[in-house]
Image (cartoon, rainbow, N blue to C red; front, side):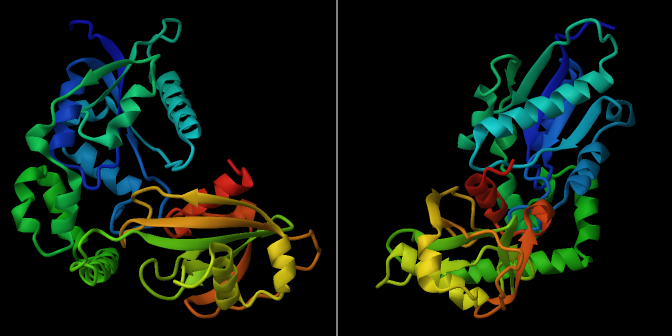
Length: 346
């Protein structure tokens, strides 16, 4: 067998869902590398309109599309988003790849040749420039495919129109998925978002929404609410909401905090406990459209007894959650990453 240029090629994507464009990249990679590492992005997040399928489900789609002989050459691993910290995200990629290379490199005394493979379709492919220590292979975009319209069709009753873009096993898998409770829930969320956007369809330009969120910390706990309505029904979120036309950002934050948690702390104490403020503006942070939030970091004095809270307004419940117990799989939108960024929690 001829020696291939690379020992490992790394392919990073979300694969929501896995389509023939992704398959073309893998097929090209297997011709140039002994093994491929496939990192499934947006891992450890709750199901949503943008991220409907788990890493395990996406791995099944990927491996099911390959011949049996090639499956052992593929190593799929989860990759969590670090939305507001590129350096931390790069470190996670490096650590994951290094671990898999160490586990699967047949000749550990020889330095393996590693490369990145993908196609520069848009700004989402900027990562191809973040790893100068690795080689890079650019693959032409297969029929200009994008997962976004495919995903839209799957949850909007138009899957028949996109079946030709999907491997046979993925079509079969999606047919079975349509009978699950998870599919019904995402479809309802998709319908809600579509209706929400329709209300703004007559605007002369796409609207940009402004919101506020409160990151309230006391004694190693963060104050969270359980959402009682879509989007994100049942998920934990930071207390917050939309800014009224006649109020300042900080006043909107404190108003939403009181409405949603009934936090038993005097207003002047809350305002005096604000330690910082930061804007969070990832374009994909909200399914409802372009939404920029201003998060306020409120650090209360340590106390053995946490202030009493009670859910109100848009919140079913309010909870103090230990920082170590935060589970990104159960947290709405990018709120986990906002907490990470403001608390320095990595």
